[in-house]
Image (cartoon, rainbow, N blue to C red):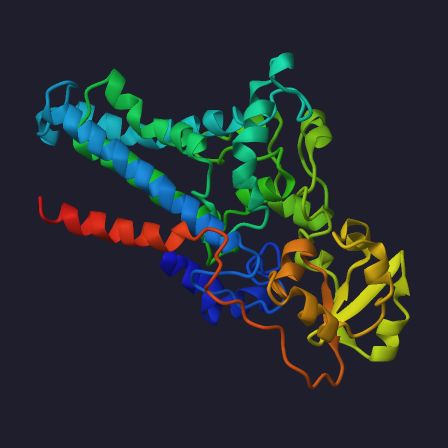
Length: 391
């Protein structure tokens, strides 16, 4: 996952993908201002969250492997170790795993989305709406996904997701290869499917559309497109060409934008145009309904944020259309600095101030991570891998 994140978001290939229009959402979800993502940290906190909970997912995956290895070794569950002792059965199960894997994913995933209406709850019998609100919505924080987004789930969702691998051995006799094949696919497949890039990236356009619009494309088109059967299939090429979602009426009614970034562009053509601004041009945007300011040479549209500012509207309106870098630095240097812009106003940067000779937006340090356990989890995984070599 680290390699694919480096290849698609950190290396020079990222610029190539974006310039060629191959990134489904042109906004850099980790560094909206600079477009230069790091390996382990981000100004938005998205990368730390994704690394932490993906690692928790892999740890749960490893735990299931340990549990079933113990159950087989203790003869508490049936298992056979000679794959070719039952060639027809072994090959049939191996072939069937692909169908089981994707069918299971559809129903496990669909079950964590609203069954009737996203405003429903347990009292109305909508278990899916309840699970989405309290469990699956955590995964959908990555509305603009990257490689680390795939397994970034609530631990309860990890339990449902990995039931694909632990359910069959409870019901039928399997060879360890069957278990490992299914498990490794569960571990690895989400990486490319969530990278947010067209070919030669993962080309998970249908699933990207699910993350962007939520109530469509719950499964994958192979081996059976269950979304087409149930009226929730949205074809990416059709959407890109026409802006229309080819889904049923129920799905259209349930579609919504990311709650914390309703103005994020879905397609490259819909992105706000960034350009060079003069200070005189910025100064014209100084009203409650059209409010810009300048920070570190970045022109920022704060119109939608004015009413949400923790310090009140008056502070922002008194500085509308002005360069507020010095005041901002004095007040917010210890509470997050420029990282607060990415957190509170994602996609707010609309260009650069022409002739700016001051300092650029400061690069966030590795201190004060939103998910400080991420680094510890990597060390824990490395120790576990080293320990496994000793047995």
